[in-house]
Image: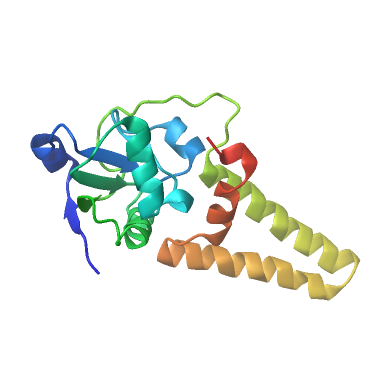
Length: 175
């Protein structure tokens, strides 16, 4: 199933009062910089019921919901999860918050580490652990480093990062 894709400029020119821009990144990423006027609904919470709950909390009956993330990958994943939402029109922002070229609202506290950096720290730690355990305990532990490296390659090639999705569900990344 394909969804309409619009540019940020088109969104600004044609949005109506009830239309809503939904950022599907994790709460820490959202707090680190988001489009003014957007609301956060993390990818893990994206479902027709989750979206309807968000709309009810905001007191809205949106006729159009546009999904945005960092690069567009998670927006596509969220759209697939929301394909059964029948309350209005669903579209995707072309690119993501990194490509729209406007000043972003930043509400993050200094002690919040962005999800991207959390992935780097976790992956680096696991690779180092695999190498140390492989050298000291048993060479079979080198497999841990290989597994993490393969995961990073998949994330780089496809835009899907399982470790990122797992870390996004951790308590320190919840809103």
